Length: 192
Image 1 (cartoon, rainbow, N blue to C red):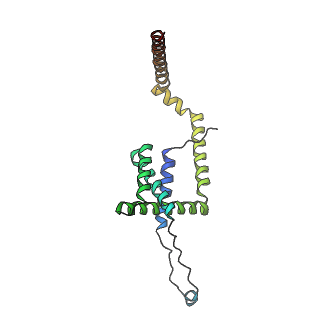
Image 2: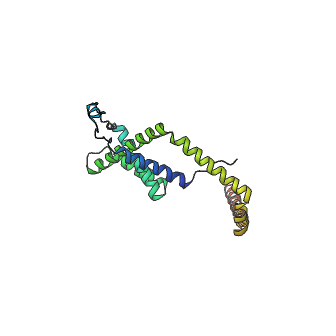
Image 3: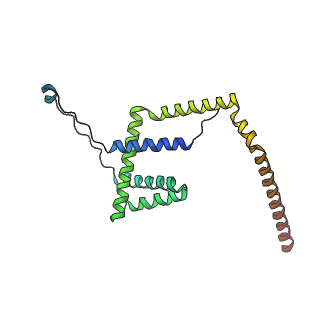
């Protein structure tokens, strides 16, 4: 059995899941109009509002938001870390940038809470993992039965190109090692 691989599709699925959680976090409870006198006499359900996250949770949410935005849009971890630090610091300020950072942090915290709630309610992560395992197993079986990757490799000649690149890398490594050895011996003879 082959191990399942993470892919951009999984990232897109998790982003979609987060967006659904964000959208559902901002929707109120749907109140139905009473149709009969009996329904009108019932006690209405209390309106549940999400409590505001603590200051620490807001700062962590702002950092998480900055990190996700940095990695998603710029495809670099360093940019994600920079934006995470910037928004985390901004969430401690009282100026307009601070308010934007706090708002992003509160929203990220609500999305996270709603995602956890949805996962707890519908058991989404094990279901998604099971679906991905099934798909990767089916793809592996198809590849074994029909030799798809070997046909692609045969048509494109990827194995030969990788072998050639590997030998060139080995040649460069030996040249660098030889030059380093020469430099060490020259340095040792000058000192002695």
